[in-house]
Length: 297
Image (cartoon, rainbow, N blue to C red; front, side):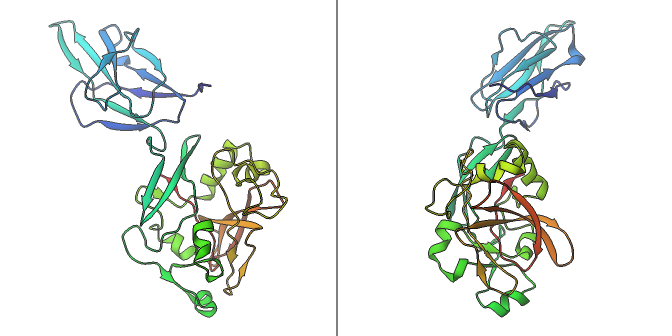
């Protein structure tokens, strides 16, 4: 079903320039508006081959036109100037969806699925990177005492077992999140607000956890309440490492950092349990080790 949400592009300048991208939610309508040329001999044009060739949009001869674009479509305005019948074209604008038409991303040697949810693009698996996006290594801190005393970004496998990485990703302390370099370029660790946007898209916190969880009991303990994996988020119970270095709650709970600091020692995280349908927001020690997802800028 097409959305009734309208996004407006105003095209005033009639000159050739570098094409600009305009991010639009998948399925939304787009309003093209050329109020400055109302009454002129105008024609809206669309390109579906990356801006190489343009075709007239049928009926697109009004100053205001509503279209339903696909990812990668380009639009421009053709104007015939009355005084000399000279044809000019506006700057071209490209429409891109949140995931830019991509279904996967490869980052530091790992390939992740991408999912679109409303106007957001999320990496559909827990992060596994051992390096920041500038190539610098993240500290691997296996020792309990070293973990609790670490003042820099750190990661670890759940229960120090490499086999857990493929199933659950890695656990990171909040210092790693706070570098701003944990996710790929043009991506970020989501804020609590980003998580709330996702939750609202799924109907609210009360049931969003179930809609994000992978179905079945291969990874989740029974009863895995309300699990539908509605958008392919495939949330799994990667457990946590607490501030003392102990590992807890694998197969029963998943924990994901946000970028929101709550105090000098605490930050906000999101959690899902096998016993609940909800997506909870809580505050925990920045020394904890939680999973991380990424959302596109």
